[in-house]
Image: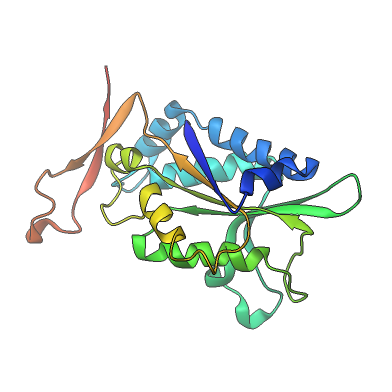
Length: 221
């Protein structure tokens, strides 16, 4: 799968400063690149329920690629049991030791949620990067990774119009400037080149049709 990247608070420079972070970053990018459009097509067509978008396919395939590389899924941020559950977990994380023995790490959020969730998902990454003895994991050096859809992927992938695409994420980062003080890299997933999702019925936006639409996968000849 093709992608573009942008960084915040010198995210790419911090990655370049650590051999462990460099390795984790390569694993992350390779996992994204390893997602073939044929795999997305096969997964979408094999789903038991009629899907509207390819979001579940991308999530599932990325999970497979990362866990094969021993990334942890649904990583809790805190040790405190009162701060458990999905609200306080990250989609993925992995730590690795540098040559000096100190552990570097990467918390990751893969976000295809409503745009209103952007701020919280960014804050979760920030919380995971801050020093705190009560954290479930502690990395000496770390960079957060936020993965989201581009506007083109949102349009061609059948995503709901309310999801927070890449352009919205950048808008949120500006007012969160004083809160997001840790390094971050944003991975923008690009649209497929061999297919698109057509929403059916085409008049799904009419009140009587809301909640009843599905996606039809159309190959580009």
